[in-house]
Length: 504
Image 1 (cartoon, one colour):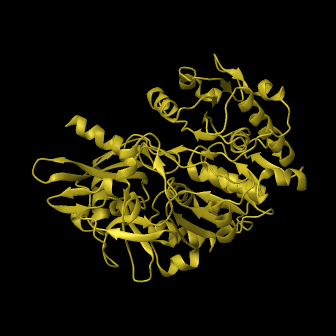
Image 2 (cartoon, one colour):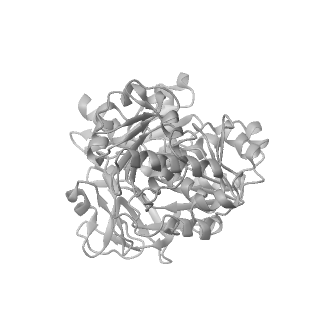
Image 3 (cartoon, helix red, strand yellow):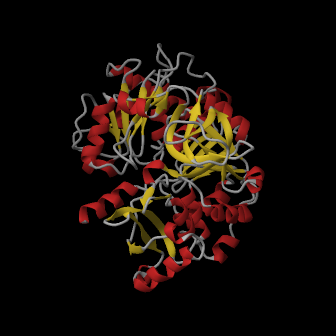
């Protein structure tokens, strides 16, 4: 399926709504704008297999630009809005982008980027950029004569190192060919023409971008928040009668910590499916969300690489608390440090065999490191499978702390500490220690900065030790007004670790 189908079938139906402003694009207008984008791409000499880049905040034009690329056989790279100049230039250069679309709100970085091709400012002016609006308005809204399927090439969030571009071959079928994600969302979550989907996350990330485009393949209405704010999110569910949404666990935590009277008056009766992924969800957080929202909450475990996919519904999860589900794509293999398969219940690195191939753009060594000749590919996570085939995550291999010869996975302590009423966010990691090798360290973002200090540090350490082995608990806690967390919920833990290593 494809939005061009619904431009004919339901032309006046809203395809995209910007939640905060009410700006709307119908399916007819979406089709016209995406066709004009395709015409723009061809007018500047780009052909099938070429790359364009988007460095844009959430806006009405974001998804139509992606649809214009998709129907032109173009590879489209959506870039984080949080990148510095060197990081953004690296992605542009590494991807080989020949055209850039940027938001005026990102002009400080965008205006200094070097691009071997045209640059367009979308929604306002940027020095040295052409104005996107007049540029596309001057072009016909008819379909280009040589339509073919393009695809995204998205870069990892770089939480454990430099971002990697995940790529693969261009699809060979027609532009309205049913994709695996379209089939999956239809079967698992009931995507269809009657759905109204609320996307509260940045569209440059894999899940928000791909699921938003799946909404348009299904003929539904996409409601996009420019930024997530918990109380506003809940009000929007009621205002737009949202049926489907996708969130990350940090959003759950922020909503759960709203005052009881605000949560009690929220009308969530229209909500059928709330999907979450991107980061591990503490068991207690998810229990409380199910108590509040009912059995609407579904979880999946996957990655931008797309070589494996696990899913679990609310009823299954309540029987297996903490699981991310059973595999629907790829056979789960748990390997030890010697790459030997482990039996159920034993922790090791998670691989998916037979789930499909991928490569990291311009980096055969990283591609090789992520793949095993006999056991498939890994996302770098540690976990185990139980006797029934349900996968449980422990942590990322890169985050493991070795203290006094004991392996400690900091996710356990993070899951405990984040539930303390005075904690807004927390990161646990290892710092160098002369005797123990590494020491367990925590950095906490308090809900009220006035609480930061030795008394709260002692309170939190005691709170953790009451629930976990002392070796898993932080020996000391520092406080930070805001942790370096990606908009998708992933924590840039390497930045915190680097800070302490440099200090030492």
